[in-house]
Image (tube, rainbow, N blue to C red; front, side, top):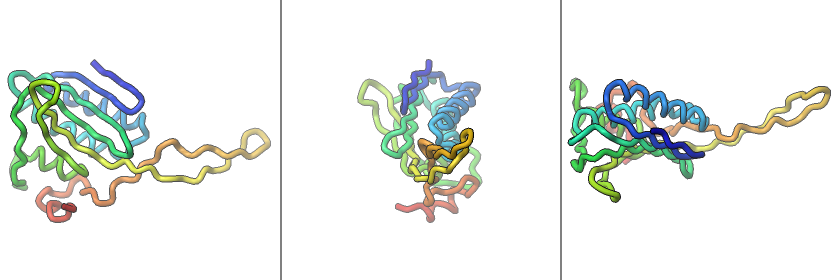
Length: 179
């Protein structure tokens, strides 16, 4: 089920491998709709890692909810599940083939965290990305024989300059992140 409003989107699902790709596409489509294309790669990677953790670790079932919210220049992606065990971020081993999900989420986001749910059993794991509006100058266009001003786009986003670019090894980026 998908619930959608102007700056909020909620998707309920079972965190199965085939569904994770679908949710990644839904997140990207929502960000494109909000004109936040610059955040799509980082948000897609983050939600993939969080849903993969639900698939691997959540008990008793894989049912979860993904919530995407844009508020006050910040995009927050949250994943709710029914397992009360909070995740632990492990030290990043650059050669490891698993166990690096939260380190990746930390590397691509401005902030992340986990807490027990206030509305029942389980937990929520979330991350946020900065979505800073940038002012642009309207350009002049010609309509018929007279020039008119075209309005500036509603939202243009500048990517957080302190963010670690994708493809940078987590261990190499750990010292570069502001504390």
